[in-house]
Length: 208
Figure 1 (cartoon, rainbow, N blue to C red):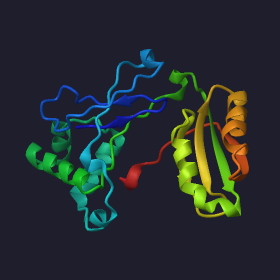
Figure 2: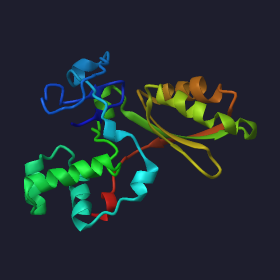
Figure 3: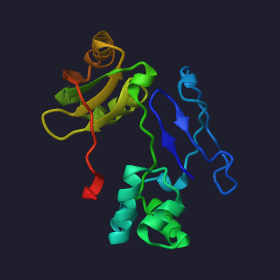
């Protein structure tokens, strides 16, 4: 059972026809640009619900950390491939993976889509500072961001700024209009600062 989430309103689940999938309810959303990468469905998994108390009780050994390192580089690796790389029996490897999911260590499996393929070649980071009297609106503001198609991800900060928003756009005019329509015009927002992204990379997860 794998849940994959994409930007632009496209959701993916390759397990729709998997007899072993215990999830019977599938939510389907078709994007207008679906032809770019195919037909996708989503199935929500019960183990994806985050439980902080349960997570605090988890102790990861060296094998768990190696397994997470392999999955962070390629989450589509088969259980057989993972078990061979770790020197484990397939059943043991599968049990460890299930335990990591059920405990909340693995929150979800995702796929990263090239923004250029969706007609959004430009990326930007927008810092947002809320007005002092609008701090109680942070949750509502975050919920509004989730529904905007330009949002790739956002972070709630502690410091001079309250949010850091990662957006994708067609061009600089698209970015300017996004900031004006959804940020500057919001009465809860005190100020914004926009920086264009020239290059976006990933580090090695967990140092593995």
